[in-house]
Amino acid sequence: MKVMIRRDARGLSVYVPRKDLEEPVVAQQSEALWGGWVRLKNGWVLELPEMDAETRLPITVNARRLEGGAE
Image (tube, rainbow, N blue to C red; front, top):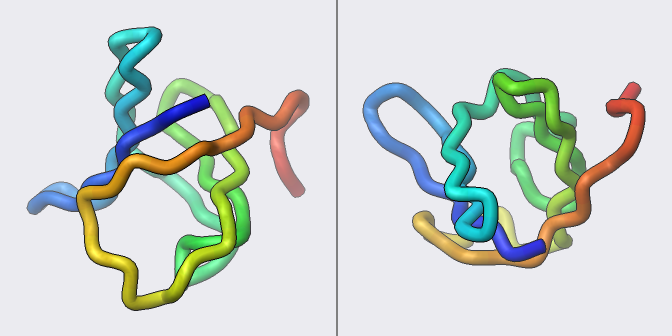
């Protein structure tokens, strides 16, 4: 699914246009953000694509929603 990732004064957030949903990121697998999972405040876990660590935000990417969360 297409999602927009942005950073503001409160931290990272993810916007899902098709669901009209914006949620803050409460946990992430790696400091670099890319190539791992992020957990949203509503409990969704999204797998993000591999990208350069210096990728500028905001950006729209294809993410995959993981079932059952991440370890």
